[in-house]
Image (cartoon, rainbow, N blue to C red):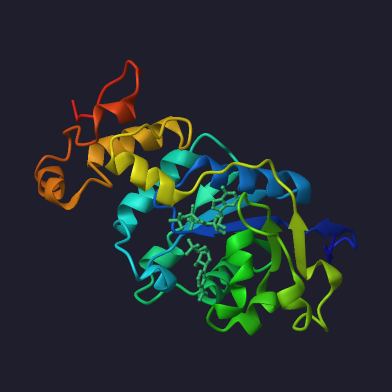
Length: 245
Ligand SMILES: Nc1ncnc2c1ncn2[C@@H]1O[C@H](COP(=O)(O)OP(=O)(O)OP(=O)(O)O)[C@@H](O)[C@H]1O
Ligand SMILES: O=C(O)c1ccc[n+]([C@@H]2O[C@H](COP(=O)([O-])O)[C@@H](O)[C@H]2O)c1
């Protein structure tokens, strides 16, 4: 671990901060397990979840409102004292670039070591990210396994010549074959998302009527407390629909 000198000559370990970037539409248990595993393996003091503002590589589909994705991420992470959520990307008035995320977080935490966490699919496409050459100066990268994707680093090896060996690390994590796309499709068709996402996120999706077919959106907007998600999404749980009552 890198050390920094203290007034008395003693060395103080640097704070280690994980950065879990994602569109989180919705956040699911695969994201949470990835963050938790990396925190454990790398002895991270904190993991900051950073919902994207304008994910330019997802411009081919409608992405839910940033505020909904942010709130779901807050709900999902609230019970873990090491997890927090940042608004840096959703408050920036431009497309979301990880280089900006990391620059902002570096300014906020100048003495910390940053560990950017990516799934195998995201890591595979990192050379298509904007200003990617700067990324490895700003943070270490941790690529985590994900069912259905090959976790590899060969595409980066030609670009990491002068960087330390631990600039990008690959780790195997418990396999959770969950995706936000699948959760959205389930909610849309009235199938359960219980246990794929935290309970509070199920309730938030229900309360806000997220991921419903277009013709039900108007109802959702005009009656935000109404249960607009199919009953199957609620399963057999004995709980409220998330009404404001
Ligand atoms: N099940 C999973 N296991 C490991 N990593 C994951 C998993 N799901 C997502 N990730 C990683 O989390 C980060 C954010 O992912 P994102 O918010 O795009 O979720 P997603 O499930 O891939 O969404 P979508 O299905 O809409 O593309 C990415 O680095 C992605 O690779
Ligand atoms: O910097 C970029 O150009 C860039 C392009 C695509 C994705 N990313 C980041 O990769 C993370 C996962 O993104 P996504 O789209 O798979 O949810 C998230 O933090 C994004 O900001 C970053």
